[in-house]
Amino acid sequence: PEPIMIAPSILSADFARLGDEIEAIDAAGADWIHCDVMDGHFVPNISFGPDVIRAIRPRTSKIFDVHLMIAPADPYLEAFAKAGADIITVHAEAGPHLDRSLQAVRGLGKKAGVTICPATSEQVLAHVLDRVDLILVMTVNPGFGGQSFIEAQLEKIRRIRAMIGDRPIRLEVDGGVNIDTAARVVAAGADTLVAGSAVFRGGTLDAYRSNISSIRAA
Ligand code: DX5
Ligand code: ZN
Image (cartoon, rainbow, N blue to C red; front, side, top):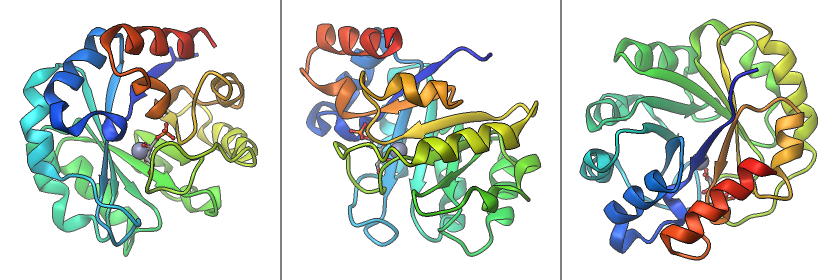
């Protein structure tokens, strides 16, 4: 089995000190940096765009995992690629043409991810499995950090793990992941955990280090 990756979501960071926060989670043991991009249209919140990602990119050499909650995504893919994203994940629900979006991401030389919301069936993944490097399962409705984990998604995670088979696709889970839910998510087949509020609580480097190691231990 793949090693478990922990990807802190910087949505829960102190935006006034974002560069320092990136350095702190890097030092605290984050594997990837999860960047939540929200447009106020696909999701009911607005976060940040490619210019912010470009500004923080030099603060770490870790993988930038960019979760686009924007519709349509296609007009902005090149900007996120140039800003320093390593993985670009688009929502299956964002449309209009998921297959085209995924081909565009790979065409830009980046790893391509597809995300599905809690109410979306895993069947939308069936015809894009050869076009993706990562599948992201939302275990909350996208838009905000700090929401509670939707238990019913565990069954979907299990089914997606079976669909992946031996393909080299990472299975990432996002929303409500903490020391109480992490073990069940991994047991269901996830290999990459996004965590926002569970990593950033405490607000100091020592707290981040202890939060990340507690999630890893769980
Ligand atoms: C939700 C975002 C998540 C979120 C996770 O729309 O995609 O990455 O920030 O936050 P927690 O871990 O607090 O649920
Ligand atoms: Zn996210």
